[in-house]
Amino acid sequence: MALRSIAALARERARRIESRVVSEHRLRADICHAARVLYERGHNAPADGNVSARLGRRYLLCTPTGVHKGELSSDAIVKLRLADGLSIDEKRPSSEIKMHLGIYRARADVGAIVHAHSPHAVGLTVSGQSMAEPVVPEAILGLGGIPTVPYASPTTADVAAAVLPYALRFNAFILERHGTVTLGDDVAMALSRLEVVEHTAHITAVALATGGAPPIDATEAAHLRKMAEDAGLSRPLDGGAPIRLSAAEESLAEALAERVLARLLAPGRS
Image (tube, rainbow, N blue to C red; front, side, top):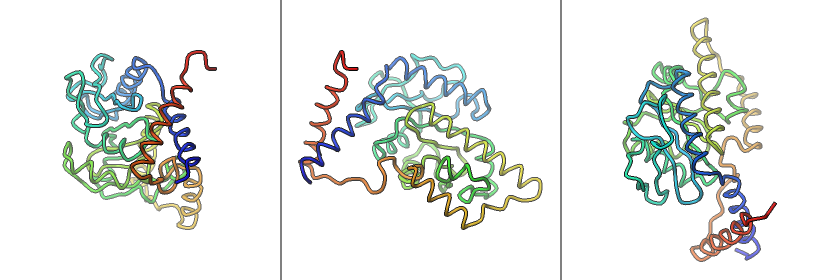
């Protein structure tokens, strides 16, 4: 790969990192707020669900396991190394941390993940109703579609393996008989997407209860999916297949990214 292409890739990586540079204090507060919203709006029972977010390039913040999400404090948030998933503060992260780590490693554009046991969305999977063919256009235009991931035992590595093919293409999906997972640039975006999923599930459930929920016409659905893909909603925001670098090119791109990032974050830069 030409040096110019590697340099361009490095600059883009550095800009993506810079755009997410927020204080750890702020990120912890954002996670606590999202966890509280999920509990107060009925998406989760007290100890259910989990929220995580990238902290720079090497770390991850995540809600702890077994803690009341409506009463979460910032100092309870767990800090982990993204490379190996080990906690650096001896706290226990969410039992679904394997799923979070797998998504972050596969999707460089994802800055936050929200997982909840939203009743309508999960209820539809129990009844065998999929939202992969949605009844309202917003599910496609806003999210690129909402597929259902086949059942896997919660908290196991099987969940992470089952989720990965869907996470590579979609920013929202439902784990069968388990819960909703949404991805975003930041915690606010991931939370907003989760609420769109549950609202769509509610509409679908009401339609089913009052006469039926026929999906959007196939031709219109294909048109909407194309619009969503063009907007980068149904695949990683990098778009298309990821650029494959050799080990030497990868090392050079990372080194360049570090130098560009240092300049971008230099004191006094406007």
